[in-house]
Image (cartoon, rainbow, N blue to C red; front, side, top):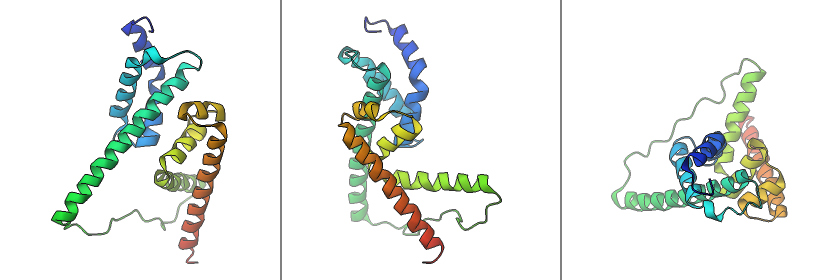
Length: 185
């Protein structure tokens, strides 16, 4: 691949596509997964000359994917800001509150309770700052070590540990508050 063989890069894409798609899906959501993953592979192909080999290829590819996700989030943020500014000038006629699924519905067994907890966790994870979300995703979903996460995100290992601790603490607090609200306390 480093010698410019496009077929060899196709093999790398085939080998790592599920991993990249999974990471992008967890960081960006299902709507952007395909576009962002393709952009990550394209950027990786263009940047192959920067791969020095002192890390695993997958770690380097995760880093490229992480950077593409950050860029895409920044673009989304700027676009949303412009849309909100334009909306404020025009006015928004749809001030109706959003409707959510009935979370008070009784669940028939423990499997459904676990699914419910996973869904609630996913909602809370989506509200976390991107660096916390990335650390959680890489650690729990992708089962990366602290060292690998530090290399992928280009941060010190202690920062990874702190971010993971703080992310878990925020999730715990959010779930406790949710439970307190459910019990009316």
